[in-house]
Length: 219
Image (cartoon, rainbow, N blue to C red; front, side, top):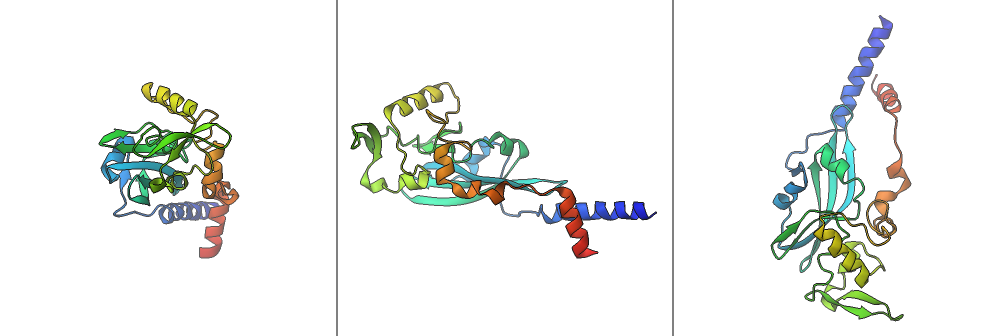
């Protein structure tokens, strides 16, 4: 009888934790897949970068993604949306990547390095040699903040990068950079989106520990 009671209490605690960590998010946009991005993302010229992803709940999980919306002419804003499990898992390697772009009415959903929609566009910048003579993409002064918004840091595209991007785009294939600089495992992404990669974010807490803590605090 005592074992049954303990088991019952564990189930109650388990369900309680699931409910507590998976609250109903009324008013938050829900995206089942990449097609939903077009509906929730405003603006005519925008690049959407995935900056964070996490799940809450145990029995009933709720998945979230944090998005950075970089507007070519209007600055930057952030948005948190709920997503399906499949869409969350599909993008687990795409932190720091542009998962949606809308430029001049044309929309793209294939994950690509952030800012590729602006590279090669003479309305935003031009190819110029740096101090070492290496030709790189430079934004005009009016868009000097774009590299910071895009998560580039000191990195700048070279013609070979752009050519490889175009090749991947034509084949409808995700591109992570010439040396995989971007995405969850990319060095540029890890340097310029440090919050996602903090050690405490990567720690996993066992269910047993949470249940025992819940019982101790509530019974």
